[in-house]
Length: 243
Image (cartoon, rainbow, N blue to C red; front, top):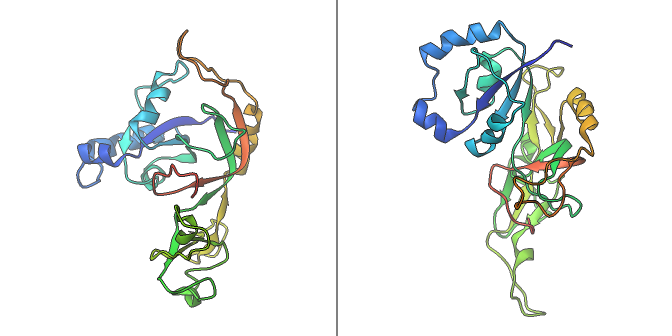
């Protein structure tokens, strides 16, 4: 396998606004990109914010050269469009509802689902009603729904209750596989990560990580690397066990 260098793209809207209000690349950066691509292909690291970037920069294993370019972009598409990228690795801070995973553990999921893609059903309609645009293949009832009234609290036993927010139906991603029909969409709720890199990551399972930042500040459990089957991602900051 060709050795891969690392190109970091910091996908932070705040950084983008501070650097380039219109989201375009400066002429200087555009001149530097071809020079960087001569040393490719790259492994692209997508890092969503400075908080998650600092540990990488402070790591003694982090190395750089005089052709490293930091670009603030809106989407990973900038990374793929301008750089000779072999694969993309996205990492960040997550939460868990799995009691066997502790604070500080590093989890690697085989499949990911985007659980904030919804069809929000109007009040008065229910599970038996067809969703709008379903006939066009846009929305489905295949993956279940969340009924807001089911999470009402402080209700007297036996009393009826309802909620005007009604139901949200979880929806799959629209995907365009590279081996599929051009411009013909497919749908997938659980999207697999790169098979090659997932197999490589299995070699890290069980790796014990540092649990202390100094002699007095330590995690209650020694952190480790854990392989899990599925993970979820949303376009909202989600810190709610009921959801």
